[in-house]
Length: 227
Image (cartoon, rainbow, N blue to C red; front, side, top):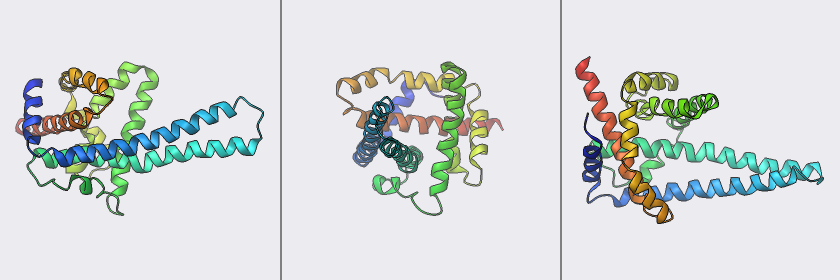
């Protein structure tokens, strides 16, 4: 396995000269996520205010319905998009064509692939959430334990979502700290993203995603050799 700096440099080199389609896709995903999130938060605030008033029950239920609708849209739209966005970086690091990155990001919205792009991230999130109920630290540890599930799902479509998560746990045994340090090595860039009101994240996020995909490729290769 490479050092954190080597993964950062390799990710930057992979995207060098052809980052534009990835940045555009990142912008579209960010805008959609923020739009859904802002609307959900807006209706949630209305819901909280109404819950402490004597307004009529039908009005209360109407606002609650809007909250639920926002959450449902996030699940059915943002989650599959995020899954496809992340797994597309396998194509990037493998040197495959990705100039139509945005179009590819929406490619899973069909009868064949949509269920997969929803099931794997949803089940992963449920497991992490359940661990978070115990304490924050176990939840963070498990999130890294399941970090390869998306890529495994893409490479092995014959596996169920549960099997992808299980295989990720096996693959990440002894490597969770390494991936955590890789993420931590981007802390300076992430602080700059905050200072630029998130604008810089359009360039930083793709590089982090590419680094994760490179990490997966090396981890898979090393374990294939050991086997």
